[in-house]
Length: 166
Image (spheres, rainbow, N blue to C red):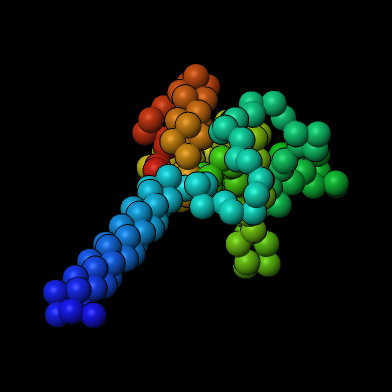
């Protein structure tokens, strides 16, 4: 093999190495971009093979009415006990009412109708706040807005609503 052929082979090997390095760099960049996109759009990282359904918010009551432990009707006394503030959590596409049982927080899944009924029965604190909404990072905007719209339609004044974002 001549010196010129040897140099051509070296250049070819160097070009091939550079090409493989560039391809690897592009693959890493695509991986980083996809990783960032999944953090901006929760729910995209579901890799269990199931198709994700579009967000649907139900305003229909569940088969069993939700009454948090604190305000359950007493069997002896048929009047409803009232709470000061209803603590609601918005997580992904779901709503939860948070109560305490034996000094431990308890999350109970709830529908919009159940939340509205509970808020209407709440007495509110001294500032007049009747519902505290805790919006988790995973909460969907559609779900959050559906709750705010339902409270507005139920004529719950904005001064009676406290919103906390996590």
